[in-house]
Image (cartoon, helix red, strand yellow):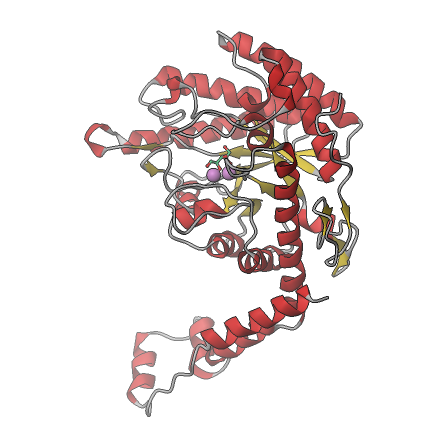
Length: 440
Ligand code: XLS
Ligand code: NI
Ligand code: NI
């Protein structure tokens, strides 16, 4: 059965196309610095936003028109798998991502939940055997069910810790079975509401213990995918422990986990933390910790995770700049952790939204590569720090000085001269690059 019968395979038609169901900039085969756009961008569809969620929000019930919603229970789960693989093929993505509860309903017991999941995972595996779409990552949802009210691995309740361990154990088995390239940990309820009732030290120590057990179990079963932590500062919990990349990195270093994890960076989580998307990518990159990306965008007027499809070209350009500087994303990719707006409730909107996101990152990729080729920022930054390549600066960088020598040097300095950082000039150059890429 076809779930998207009004849509054919989406193809690249170029920037003059007026066909709403065509890529204008994303040409999977086009080579950028020797690699295809498909290989460089590694797009993924988020199962939850596209096939499971129904548009409901705290003020209104589900309103998305989905042909699979005539089913329920396991039949619904199976219909979603069929719809998902039809969608993956038509939108032509190499990857998808899911939480355990997105693909299969929870049973009355953990055992029943496992049985449901096993049945659907078998079905997914079957579809994957003839599809080009692979699993970028899977994860365990440890935030929706009421049992996670006080957290999962950081719960006050040891039974919940054990239950969470069982879920991740199963998730790692699924990851191995489906050849998942990564396994994600997003701790939506790993945090606290008030210190009045919280033992933060114990919670963090437990989280460290939990991650070590996950590392051990992956090793035991021979699962070699990359572990990823997805930082987010708040929502649903007030203070989330994996606040941002820097906080997550300090945690990993303290618990000696830094060699087993990288970060999955979500644009909207970066802005919730008071950072730009490129800041988070940059901090991860310079620490060798950039693993994967949840590509979306927030709304500067709203203070929560709106998970919009990314259409801001300035942001996609600066993000792709970091990703290219990182030498790509390795086993990671660009997962659209994004949902169509409640008003965009027709099935075609799912295609329009993904096309918008894929085209935006394709443009970002092209412009970023050009900025790198022309050494626009590199050249400027190199010059800006040139005082560290000779004389006293060289001594500082090479560790050949101390406070005595620096004081002697400072005492005989004539007037100190600084030069402009040229922020506005650089921004106008980026605009020029953006506009010239678009007119080609
Ligand atoms: C929520 C997160 C979530 C993770 C996976 O804000 O983005 O969707 O990506 O659990
Ligand atoms: Ni996410
Ligand atoms: Ni999010």
